[in-house]
Image 1 (cartoon, rainbow, N blue to C red):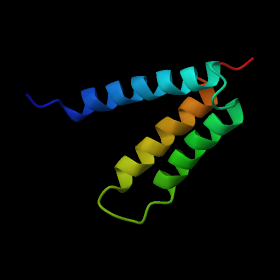
Image 2 (cartoon, rainbow, N blue to C red):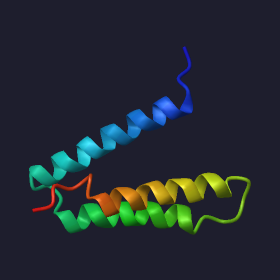
Image 3 (cartoon, rainbow, N blue to C red):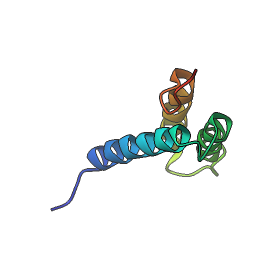
Image 4 (cartoon, rainbow, N blue to C red):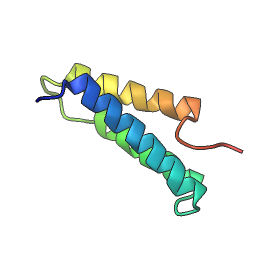
Length: 77
């Protein structure tokens, strides 16, 4: 059975968010490192070379930046 990309992507996002929260909760990574990881991921898509995937890269960067703005992947104190 194949899994549609939107389902796989949503599952991957949920798993990653839980992993980042656990890493922070267990003091493996501090908040600033987690924020840095997310910023790096957004920048990779913002600065991707022009291609047929421009719209996808822009949407991915926008989603990651909205996660950063919302603070969803870090329990901010």
